[in-house]
Length: 199
Ligand SMILES: CC(C)(COP(=O)(O)OP(=O)(O)OC[C@H]1O[C@@H](n2cnc3c(N)ncnc32)[C@H](O)[C@@H]1OP(=O)(O)O)[C@@H](O)C(=O)NCCC(=O)NCCS
Image (cartoon, rainbow, N blue to C red):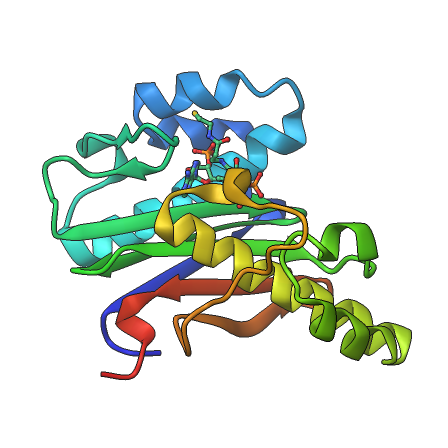
């Protein structure tokens, strides 16, 4: 990865709800709105991944920075406009990415079965027919990779998945959204930033 984008991952097996005490009151209130403990622990894990990145790169804890959300819900740091971050939580993991000078999106996805109906919202007919002839394991892996890259890219742009339309594939500029080594046997990680694109 280029020197301008960094990421951290935290497994929820290391997280109990007490860990939220390290976070800002605003974030704790937000997390407490999740009804299920698993959702709360995933959100805490992602916040702690962000906390590590903030400490490393800005010398500040998450509880020491102001975080706001734009009109689409994407969080940002109003006091450090050159720094961009994003978080994601799914399955056993919470993850975060931070970048200096370029917007960033990150997505963790649990490996899931190929679903033609869902695929039509981000893959082209050609991609779908190419993937359908693969053996099931490879098909599911490629499908989840493509979806994670797509979600990271849409989160980088800030639009999220609300802009997806059936029959309109998501075209990602070369190398802007990449798959990182899997977090484990069932969780894939994608990150998107113009900082990753060839100069
Ligand atoms: C962002 C979005 C892709 C999340 O998808 P998901 O797979 O459920 O969740 P992930 O775990 O990957 O990411 C969630 C995190 O993305 C961040 N996020 C929220 N909206 C975002 C956006 N528009 N762009 C980038 N990141 C966003 C948040 O930090 C969120 O975590 P938090 O709620 O714990 O703070 C999806 O909710 C979306 O498309 N939202 C934007 C469009 C929308 O519905 N807007 C409504 C107007 S408020």
